[in-house]
Image 1 (cartoon, rainbow, N blue to C red):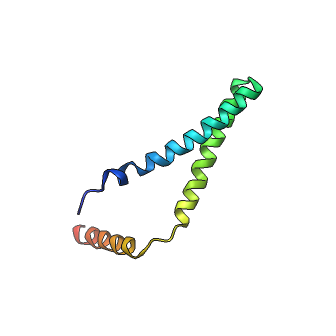
Image 2: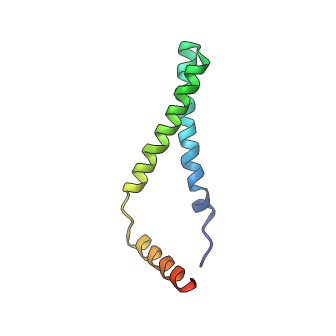
Image 3: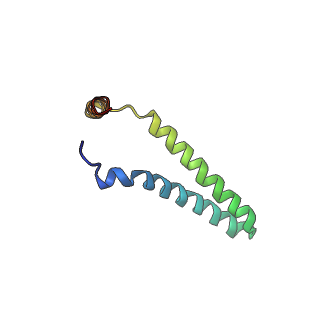
Length: 83
């Protein structure tokens, strides 16, 4: 079995980073407009979690192309042969 590429290994970190950036922007906007740190942290957390959930739902909704299906079947066959 081939090793995953660096891009494949860091893809989850990209999604977490994007979610954090969206949450941070939302938190900063609330902090600058209300000057309430607790409320800003709450909005930051809600923005982070909400963005992460929405992106995960979009990722689950993507239909794999033929190359991905072949790759999944090969990996599945290797797992069955190895165990």
